[in-house]
Amino acid sequence: MTTETISRPAVGVTWSGRSAPLLTLGRREAKRMLKSPVYIILAAMVFLSAGLDSFGGGFPTKGPTAAAVYEGLLYFLALYAGLLAYIAVHLVASSSRRTHADRQLAASAMSPRARLGGMCVGVALGPFAVALGIIAVMAWLGRFMAGTDESSFLSEDAFMPWSLAELSQPALTVAGAGLFAIMVATWLRFPGSLPIGFVALLFGTLFVLDQGGSLPWFAPYITAPDWADDPRALAGSQAWHAVYLVGLCALAVCGAMLRERDGRMRWLGISAGVFSATAVAGWLQL
Image 1 (cartoon, rainbow, N blue to C red):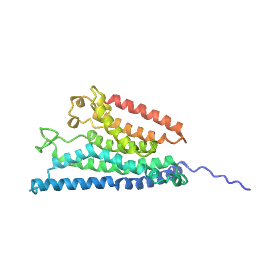
Image 2: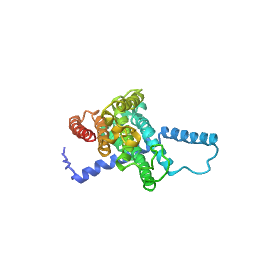
Image 3: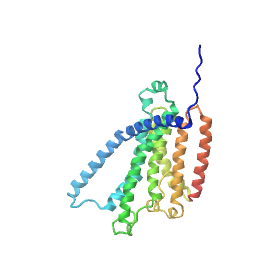
Image 4: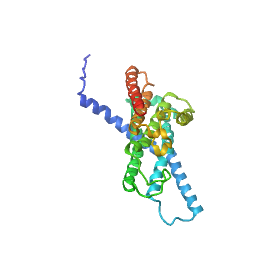
């Protein structure tokens, strides 16, 4: 019997060998998330609503103003995109359990933690990337509308577009909702976990937002003054709140990774560091 020794690859080769399958899996998961029936139903509702508006008020004589497009995109990101991302991502993350494919996946070459990493990459390449595209359109519109007399539901004064720190917050809430869905689907592996996480995310956020003092700043939501409609939103830092939302996204990733026993101690250390950094950002935002 002969023994063959396999030498450890170089650092660059190791990273490339691990990242390439992760990115491939991430792109596949992103396509599955964006092709979810949730978004198809949303598109049907939007077209139906637009058709009913046209039927009730007659055919419009001119197209929507730039401010109307800007605010429509903002409404979608702030009110609907995060919740839709949660549902779509949870359906993808729990698909192996619902189709009884866990045993087949366990026999594959990719570890469960690598598959979790691929789903997290899928959130970044899917719902978050779409949200960033919408933010880019809003930033482009804002450049040509600043200080104009365009009507706005956010303010009675001249139109003032949001800053980059403020615009990043809706996109980060979309990413956070998707990553939270992965964590919920990973830990709560039973039917009904989707509505449980949905209720916890929605009503937990509303509960924190309804508190007094500086507690609303710790909600995983938007604190832009025009949107929050609260004098407290003028006192804090929008940039640090965006960093705080990034920390919450990272904590959701850590929470999902802690589900697997292999390497759990290492991820506990990573989670402690991420939690400390998020706590510091939460303090600096006030």
